[in-house]
Amino acid sequence: MVTPKAYYFDSNATTSVAPEVLQAMLPYLTDRWGNPSSPYRLGKMLVDPIEAARESVAALIGADSTEIVFTSCGTESINTALTSCLYTQPGRRHIVTTAVEHSATKNCGAALEARGYEVTYLPVHADGSLDLEAFERALRPDTAVVSIMWANNETGVLFPIPELAARCRSRGILFHTDAVQVPGKLAIDVQALGVDFLSLSAHKLHGPKGVGLLYVRKGTPFQPLVIGGHQEEGNRGGTENVPYLIAFGRAAELARAVTPAELARLAALRDHLEDSIMTQIPGVTRNGAKEPRLPNTSSLAFAGVEAEALLLLLDQLGICASSGSACTTGSVAPSHVLTAMGLSAPAARSTIRFSLDHDSTEADVAYLLGHLPGLIAELRAAASPRVAARALAASAAQAR
Ligand code: PLP
Image 1 (cartoon, rainbow, N blue to C red):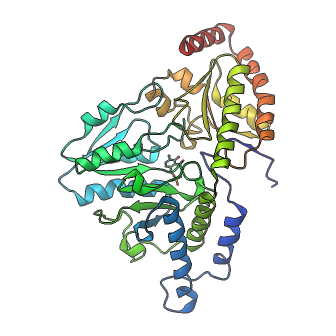
Image 2: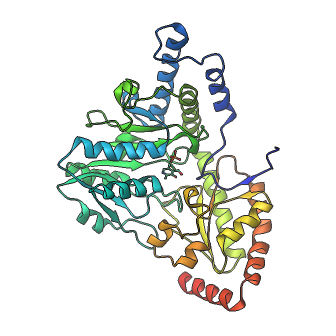
Image 3: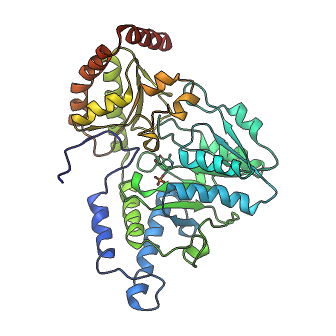
């Protein structure tokens, strides 16, 4: 099957495997296929490359390589951080997180609640920013961990992690951040962030799907989630996924090489896309604050339009975007992130997320802008005139 040409505006869902990353991992799928725990050369020869990959991902976040635990994905990293904090502090049965986390955190919290733990989901303001007073009020002597994402995957809105982590540290509460959306878009320095745990996933930075990491600050009490062999210093059982670890290391090198000039280009391209849509098409509102925000993400509500229908039309043209986080695609339930920001269910269902990448070009954006106004007009014309007029009026009132 030939892969169709894609105008890809969905890099918060996943990114392509970079050619350099593929080149780096291929020998570990062919000649170097041993088990790193084996006593003979075919296995032992893999130990140094894995450690080099560990050094590389550690360098991406300003950590020491001994503070890195490789995992199978961002979701596993997040689950590991939360459960570790509960296992190592049995007297503390309360978790604080936000109402806008990725389902990896949200549903882990729900599962822990079903097992008798207590979880506080902090509200956000209409612009997606955190309610800091609610944050202060939520911290308790029995809080085991505060887990707050750095960058929201749907809106790109950033939370003030250094400030939040410092407030937790001063009260002796462990702090985890889901930084899955951040690499290659912002510089990461775990020392400046002051976090105890941080989760990443390779497929958001041009590595393969199915490999992630958990940063665990030196000296932080830790208990594994995946219990088995002695791999990862006993911190995560399971034979190492060698090709993917090597790939993650190479992807981290590429993410570290992203220049400030490239980040400025990305932000300018995103702004051009967002501004053009908002000036060329009536009834469009941005979800979330303009700043502080990831430089690549734009979440826009198109009044009176069903995002799922728009996505199908865009797909016919080879344009890939998202109606919310990837994990909710296929379900018509409005995004929990957007509803937590106060959007009505119809406004949430009219939202499209465009997420650009270092591969995105002006020509890609021009192609999208060339088609989008016509598609929106078509969908609005197909809706009943009364419904469309009401949606446009509501959108205009919200914009005022
Ligand atoms: N956290 C955020 C913010 C994400 O965007 C994602 C993936 O979409 C995850 C966690 C989960 O990562 P993974 O797909 O590696 O499990």
